[in-house]
Amino acid sequence: MSFVFDLVALGILFVLAGFAVIFVAMILSVSSKPSTESKVRGGGVVMIGPIPLVFGSDMKWASVAIVLALALILVTLVVNLYVI
Image (cartoon, rainbow, N blue to C red):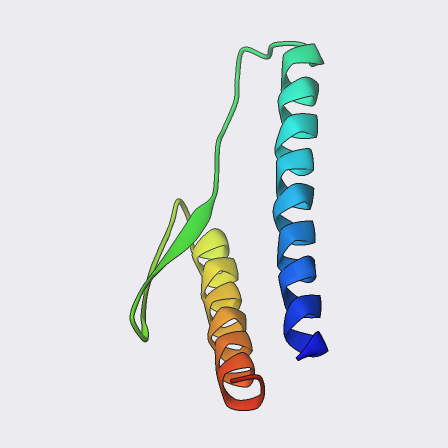
């Protein structure tokens, strides 16, 4: 039972760390010099049940998103098999 509470505490810690990263990124983006030429690249994964939908601005970021989707699926399977 204590293990489940540890997972809850870890989840809360991750959420707070995410907010901290977003806050620091906003501060850094405001304080940086504006450039005339900027490129935004990225990618993401939307999980609909067991099916990942991967998107990205170029092949590199789509590949990174695929690896992260596989890691997310693996973590979900481990948590479902061993915790529940």
